[in-house]
Amino acid sequence: MTTLSAHGFGARAQRGAVLFIALIVLVAMSLASVALIRSVDTATLGAGNIALKQSAAQAAERGVAAAMAKFDPFAVPVGFFTTVANAAESHQSAQNYCASLLPTDRRGVPLVLLNPTTANKECDLQPLASANMITTANNERLFYVIERLCTDTGTPDQAKCPLDQILPTGGTVGKGPHFGDTVPLYRVTVRVDGPRSTRHFSQVIFRP
Image (cartoon, rainbow, N blue to C red; front, side, top):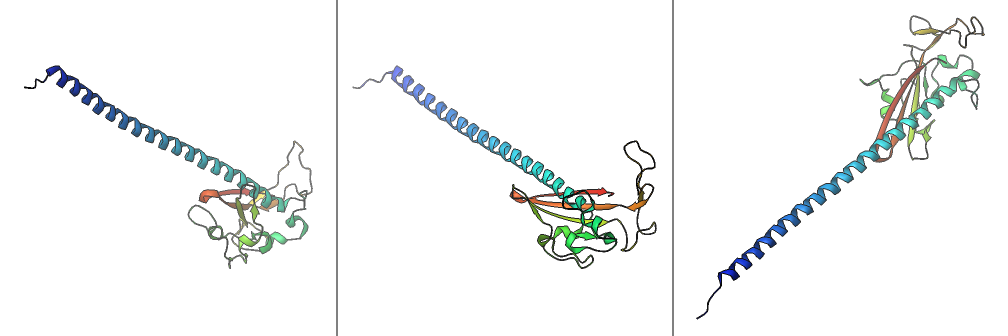
């Protein structure tokens, strides 16, 4: 007759329980590792997206500067609108310039910038993708359009344009050939397309 020891049963039961608990702990650690990896990946992706947005915003400043330089007599090359008399009173397709306001979406972005590969009949603009497009070292593409804040082309006046008066700067009063003149305001809107479908719009109103 075979005799079974109660102590043997207890030892085997304990070993089985320890194995079961170890398996549960192993599964929990695996799940925690997966969650940690996902968390790190999400944080890395988020940081990358922020960096792309910041890069696009900086690139947009370059587009704004390029557009405003067209009105600068000291730019290199000299600004187009300072060399051609009354050029700002009519549309200038080659300069991405409209002498009157363009239709916009509810954000105020000109519709022509939403599809820069097509021409704009209202302003005689050629596709922006083929004129004055800027490409940065980060493979970002910049498109911009300049608008005169007037309801129509021609000589600016109060009836169709908000005019701003040229005031003295630098503490010198009453000096300068254009002191006291009234001039129209302009708006430049820049679109930046970057990696990972990044898209950024910047808009600046300025007076030459």
